[in-house]
Length: 260
Image (cartoon, rainbow, N blue to C red; front, side):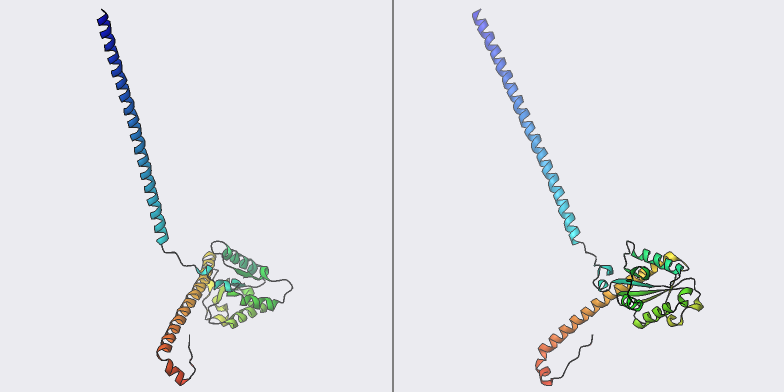
């Protein structure tokens, strides 16, 4: 009897040990599984981070390698040599004053952002009229003449037109604008100039004025670049000639002239 009790106790102890081993094995399996899952998650996060970093680096390199647009004529230093882009000349008739204001408001609004001289707004009170006008002419890239029947009737307007022609009749700085005026009434002094007819389509006419100013400024930038390249070429040519024929130039002792 005692032996049976001892045998049963040994069997129970073995079962308990076996259960403990199984529990221990399950615990280790759970621990190993959790570590494997956490490691895989870390690897996945690292892979995503590397992918994101690679994409960002590629984007930055592609954006930095893209050619940048050259500065426009509006940001050129040639433009800022003068205070205004356009001087608007008009008569003292109320309708012409309002038309000039509408034109200037259109040109000065964004994104055009031109700088205009408006007689009723930008003159200095107390200054001589002729002095103010001549100074505005000198400080403006172009001059626009709003030619109407009232413009032709005012002596002051005819003076402004003649003064604008005297500044440079072939300099492309004069923009004639006609409104409510027949072709036979067009002034003979500027009959060889192309004009913009505001009576046909006012919005199209305003846009054409803006394009004309921009084209003039762009031409000025191109001309300066051409002159700079010509000057560089002439300097290089003179340097080469001076290095190879220096003795001959010294012996001749004659002045040289470089035409640009």
